Length: 444
Image 1 (cartoon, rainbow, N blue to C red):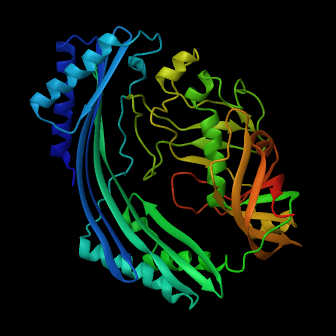
Image 2: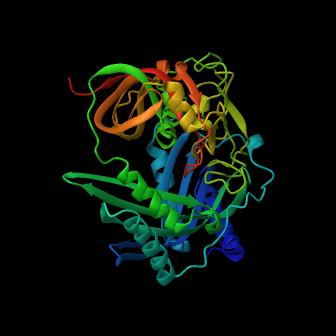
């Protein structure tokens, strides 16, 4: 696994890469180096399916000649390969067009402190032990109910990484990270009806993973609850996106306020900074400095110091998601988001999922979304869905083969509540979203 000696070695490699870039005529340059080791095992019906040991490394370099840019990469860390990589990047930079927005992030924005965010928690597990964990997970799913008749498998994945970034401002830093997961997917059958579903857990520390048997049982429960699915007639009604489906709505928000979409004028939220886009109780923030966060980082992909901030307060859009290039294109300053948003969260309104179902009274609970029917230019939204029909504040039966449609801007402004059921895997924290009204297309 990566250690302090390897970090020092990677820093020396990046420093040498930058020095060579200067020697070959680059005015400025930035480089990243990463080494990674991992283990992934999968079982199916109790038998070993795959065992994979991974060991990867890579270097990426960007050079600037004036405002001409060239990039190159290699997985070879030898001195000769580094020289050739630099030469390739410099050669590309000679022939590209000048771009007034190109260049390193401003030197004044570089991170000066690198806090320990507790991102490195290696899992002392070998292939044999990992297989037993996966088998326990799958066995728990299969034993949960006699109607669970088949499995697509269970898996365990563990990864250790070390990343170092540097640029010719004199910034060069890095840190190790780990990420682990357990997953399971099974099929339930009743008469001629067959349904599949899955569940997983992922975290920086193996100690914080959900118990493997609990993962299997949850996968089984989700498959069972979809048996007997019916179809709906087309109607307009409230829609409750369960938490793991609501994650996608937050990601659509981020895509719409990302710099590249904005300077291309390809976003339904263009020029909405400082405008109301949600009800006035909505608060959305990102916290890249969260301890053990799956997307935590002390600096972004350009060496810019990260910081917690609110993207939405009182329903008003307060900030975009920018790295240096898109910020310059927009006449703004980077928000430290080279590499994306880190640890997104929306504040809940205090209701449990069951309370949201009662509040909805009659409508559709969406648990699964299919397809890619979202147009970020117009905000038009249309996705295949499955879930549950609710009458009198209680779930009545599962449904499938429906389409939920609307406009993201209307969906955001029509958000009635966010639940407290935010214990879902991943880096986005959200509970279930109750949307006032959407079109639900079924069979007529």
